Image (cartoon, rainbow, N blue to C red; front, side, top):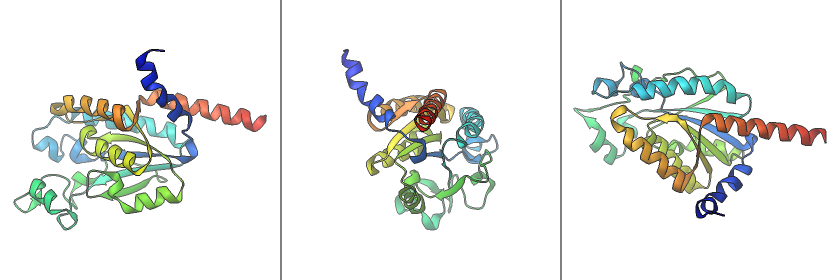
Length: 225
């Protein structure tokens, strides 16, 4: 057995323990300010083309997985000054208002439409787990695995992954369904590598869907048997 295979053996074990009924999918910050050419980041000079493209891929992926996973949630980042820490205000407030994700503006709106059954949460920090309601609901529904997609890879996605891992969740990042602005592409790649090395399973969405389908087939055979 090669050293690399030995190091990666845990991944097969972890994946074998993933059960659809105890898995949640979180869509992180797929909002106009991050993904739209008329959003705040674009207005500040960022090329958000990669984020718009990944939003379209996420929109195409979600209908495939909704029939398998029972917990789907969208997150919106909103920089409400009253909810921000002093450290956040120092970094993100200019001339009395946030640079991005301003409450009550179109920029905080979701860039792709959720399903009527999807949950929608607001957060004021990078990590989705900063939302107490989410954490309570995950506990209530006995969720043990969290799948993450969205933007920006190296900021709110990675922040969520790190936080979730520290809380004891099995974290999965779908590598083709996360992105960041063009100027930060090197950080996107570095973040994926870091998450995969220390905090999460990383795989493409097609691989994850095949895994879920195989799980479903196994469950059907067991039921018949």
